[in-house]
Every structure is written in structure tokens, then in C-alpha cells.
Image 1: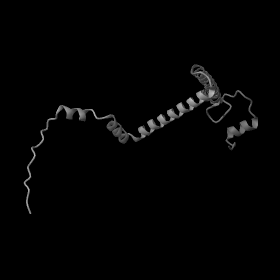
Image 2: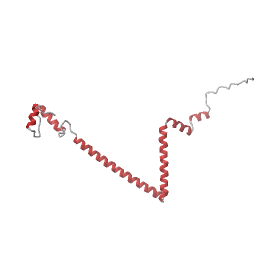
Image 3: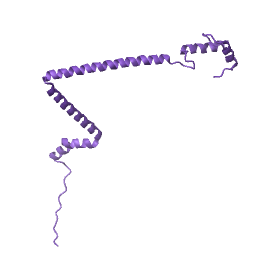
Image 4: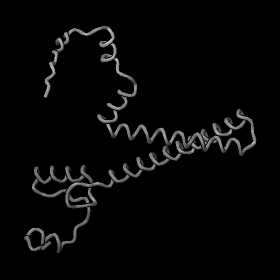
Length: 159
């Protein structure tokens, strides 16, 4: 069996030629897109979905335009008017909803009372606590049944 002599190739130099630098520094659009797809698949899917939706909307608009029989300026004017009308109606609904929500929230806040007695406001409870602290007697601004008053004093009322 004959042996062949192999020649060694000289080692490549580490310096790059201008052509090599250009190809590695500025990869093609296809290569960059491939890297982006691999790096960010969710973002790529979102972009693709938006693109498909836009194309579908354009096709639907084209068919609607052809079917309407109007000129492009008339057709675009009609679409602009309907979009403005829908936007203003939506804006009014949102404003009305926010106003109603604000009114309901203020009514609920006004109804919130502190303490166990739901009929007394915070100011009434504070006044009663202050008068009880200074005089030892509760500030009664409403008539109390004498039987209940005696039961309260003796502690016989069960809750």
C-alpha cells in the first residue's frame, strides 16, 4: 500500500482581511431575522399576528371599497366620519360611567360609619366619647327608655 505524503498548510493568520471584517460585522437581514426569531419567539409571534391582522383589515377594506362603488375620497371620508362618531360615543359613555362611579363611591363613603352604631357619624361618636370622659355620663341626644337605661347601668343587658 502506497503512502501519500501530506503537506501541511500554513496556519492562517489571525488578522482579518477587509472583506472578512465586513461580512462578520454586518450580517445579512436574513441572518439577523433568524437570530431575532430564535432569541425572542413571543415577540416574533406578536409581530406576525399584527402583520396578519393588518393584511386582513386591508383586504376587507379593499373589498368594501370595491363593493361601495364610491370614489376613494368619498369612501375614506365616510369611514373617517363613522370612526369619529364611534369614538365620541365611546368617550361619552366612559365619561358618564366615571361620573356615575364617582357619585356612587361618594355615597358609599358618606354611609361608612365607625363604631358599632350604624346611625352615628364619626363626629357624634367623638363627641360622645369626649363627654363620657369628662363627665362620666354619656351624651344622650336621643330619648332612652328608662328600663333599658337601668339595665345598661346594672349590666343586665345581653347582646
